[in-house]
Length: 130
Image 1 (tube, rainbow, N blue to C red):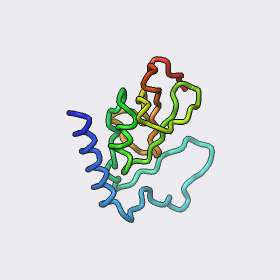
Image 2: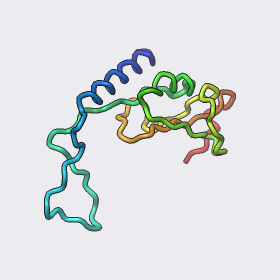
Image 3: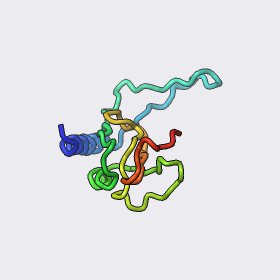
Image 4: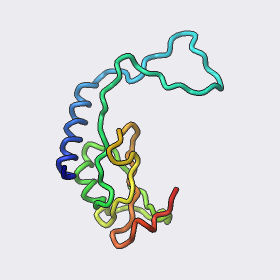
């Protein structure tokens, strides 16, 4: 499957999910008497879970400008300089994607989606791990 077909499928799923989930609460209120304290945190689960809103397409190695054009109107995203130099990514087309959070084919559950990028003339091998 090409990246374009995957992106189109993802965008269609995101649009469908946004139309069908209007006004629904994602997490129900906790019942009275629910203990709170320093014990391990449990994630409340709904009896009727929300559908997956989107899956992260595999854009690793691709041009950040192209990813922005394809996903920008529907996805809250941020570009982070993976070199560790904290350079500003003013023109995404001059950068390539080395990694993403969430990773490829994972459910997007937190925003913004973050793309770790390096200049197109640099190697992702030189990226500084977090």
